[in-house]
Amino acid sequence: MATEIRVPTLGESVSEATVGTWFKKVGDAIKADEPLLELETDKVTIEVPAPAAGTLSEIVVEAGETVGLGALLGQIAEGAGAAAAAPAEKKPEPVAAAPAEKKAQPAAADPEIAGLGDILGAAIAASRPAPAAAKLIAENNLSADQIDGSGKRGQVLKGDVLSVIAKGTSAPAAAEPAKVQARAPAPTEDAAREERVKMTRLRQTIAKRLKDAQNTAAMLTTYNEVDMSAVMSLRTKYKDVFEKKHGVKLGFMGFFTKAVTHALKELPAVNAEIDGTDIIYKNFCHVGVAVGTEKGLVVPVVRDADQMSIAEIEKEIGRLGKAARDGALSMADMQGGTFTISNGGVYGSLMSSPILNAPQSGILGMHKIQDRPVAIGGQVVIRPMMYLALSYDHRIVDGKEAVTFLVRVKESLEDPERLVLDL
Image (cartoon, rainbow, N blue to C red; front, top):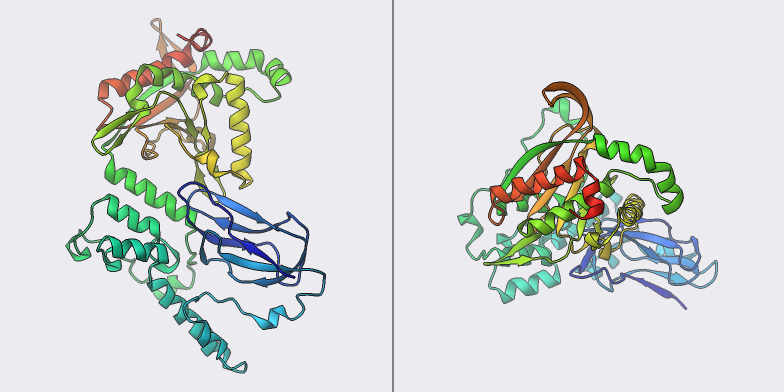
């Protein structure tokens, strides 16, 4: 008896995923709960475990294909020899719309022609909107030609249609401003040395969200610098006893996160978001911490950071960072952030202007700590200085609020006792 491998629940508002890497091939023995494959969603990569022990007898959906909730991915047969005939029995079918044509293909057909058929079939399927997207298009009297698809080979997905509906788009695409054109052909001598790689679903989502943030928000950045002497001295003095007691290293992010939560309470507009003609003020601080991974930038969230101690914040950031690097973040880890901190200093950045993490209204950029001469008390001294950058949505945050927010963060870091005394 075969056990089906199906797409699990992917999280709130996520209805589709792209099959990433299969860790097993047909005929391999499988243990129960062993990771079988990766699914890439808009936000995270999820490993799908084996629902039972046995032998992988069939792979229904190959890497790169888009699947919906509950879709059949493959099957596991009982015993070690159950998959002996499976490899020759089935080839991957990227085209669900024309199964009869593939079965009718002669076994001895020219492999080049067969391969061309697969490519053409996949292109035809990609030209059609996904079922959920097609339903929304019909209900809202839209045309698929109006919508830029973000799925494989440009297929229009449900999220693409919802984005168009949210923007109130109903006019034909021809009336819109011209889109970015495809790149011009490369010179022949350069083309052979180029490599074209399909963007992952996560990278496509990152690109779309960042561009949407620029197009939607009235984004502005204000800068300041902070003397890190006090924080560095505190770390040096207590880092050993801190790690011994709490089992985690005392870093800078705990201080910055705590300083941010203090400032957010004083300047609530920086912790709010716009919803149509309403402003939603958040009476809690869920701080997103940008983490760079091999697959792209992700922003796990430290929930209720304003209610945590510095030690609790450091522990949670450590857990989230490890999960991000291991590709083990859950959907709950990624949702609900009200403000974001991005630390480009770990890569050596001296100054940058971070882009908002929509729909949030503020993001703080940290940078490299560098010894610089500064004037203090009428004398020039060398101090470890860091530039800070606050990008904010000017539609909701005034310049005075933004500057005051950054000054409050600076004051907390230059006098960290304020964090302990809640000043």
